[in-house]
Image (cartoon, rainbow, N blue to C red; front, side, top):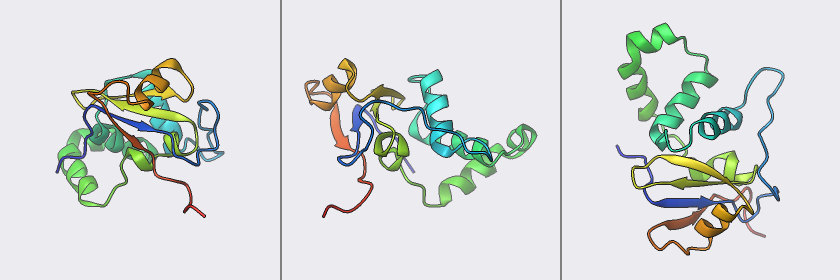
Length: 142
């Protein structure tokens, strides 16, 4: 199954409350999924595909030990991908925290803060080689 986007920009949701890019806060119990997504992509732009990122976030969020990943990595991935998983259009980064997500021709992603020149260039559709889609809304339109 192919879960990656290519030459695509996910702009913030129409009802995103953030006016600029915000770093997702942690909870007392540890990092949240959006916090882990943000750290991985912000620290490593264009290194993760959507599939790789979703699995890595799962591993870190569930605190799966490295030894288990090394011993059973293929099985863990297979089990993970058999369950329905939301794509990055449903991520809180573009829905709540003000981050657009660009996927390059290799399917690797990077974050762009809403309002930044790069965000505006992708979101405007100026680059005809990039398909622009909006993140999923937080609530149904009234």
